Image 1 (cartoon, helix red, strand yellow):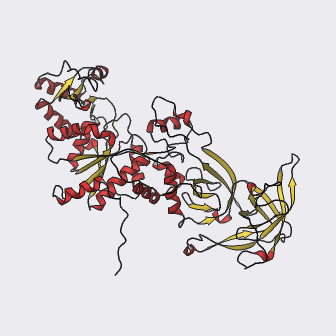
Image 2 (cartoon, rainbow, N blue to C red):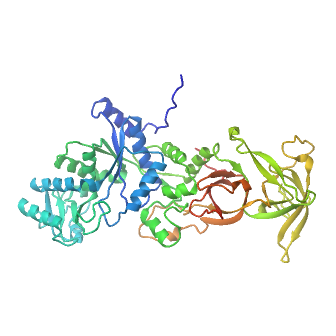
Image 3 (cartoon, one colour):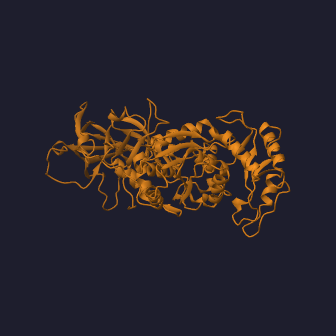
Length: 555
């Protein structure tokens, strides 16, 4: 009988423990989670972590996960972001059980706000945003009550209805919850729950001119959808009392519970949407999908795989405190994922021409090479060899230092999958630059022939010159070189690594001419590369280096 392979899961963590206890105690029958992004930008690796946690935990318990767009701010939201978020989640390998929008519940939210007014728990305030901020108090001083706090229920109902009808200007009035201006938790000091905003909404059009605040809308959405475990990052911990207040006082039938986990920061990375947006606008990045940023679309374009990202997230685990992880740990997982998948091939990034003077002119022979030596099932590829080839410019030195085992005058090296060649002559231009090397080869040393006559210490890669496919190679380094926390007051461009992108032009084996966007390869000695989907055309191959072959990081 064939056994079914177990799905990888998140390691034991406090949320999984809570879910297990809730199931065993009969508090819930089915685990229901949700991923609730605001469609105001592109998702990044931090969102990928939240997605994985929500979907995999629910899946492990046989539960459900909803995708819900928290679209309560029409000024910043757009269908473009809705579509990109859907694409990212599916690319990561997850499928939502229900697709919802906060705007689906606007009528219900309005009715619940009316309920709060009728209960004497909400009032219309005419103070400005600055006045409300100034009277909220501090961590050590209580806030001051609004002069409009004790309006009658009837007056509040009338004003709130007129707010909905569009009789007032933006910012002229707000609806506030009536809780406790002396609460030690500032979030409970009569927070604003509705504001006036005459703006077109991507989903509801011009139907509404008042919009609920996120802190009010979110718990209602969870309750309406029957979410059992509302998982969010640690920054929302102080909002939990208001979350529970809204569910209780709005008399929701379903009672969700909020649980917070620590955020994951990554070294040498910028994750903040405002910073990435600024860098795109300044032309530092060529879009939200620039391979140097850890947006999911940027990582996909660079060549990261969903399997590697999910494995990285599982390894980092779930904790109650914020933490920082070395970005090289993520690189480790993409190497592990690709080492058995990616075909091996040769690419020359900085070409130097080599003429093999004793090889027959006009002859081209096909040599066999394993597609992936670590995965023999991938088979054999054939590569052409002739009198003229390209090697890396760095693989030749006219006056080498000690223990330099590559090509130099009088030295012999092995060409990967081919023959031994010996440097006999160096050709230079008028300025003294080396433009060509002339070598001889030993036909008895053909790779795979079993030749044992002598050994060489150096093996270099190459591509045959007459059939090689020209290509562009984009080599990436960290976008920022320090690990300071992102600071809204400083210019992030001041931190940018000027060497974060290096473009080189060279050649790849001719069998690469038909490579398609997102095809991945391991280039001998250079690392893992992905065919860039944005700049590759029928006439031009562009490769993004995903990672180099080796790292000092150990898991």
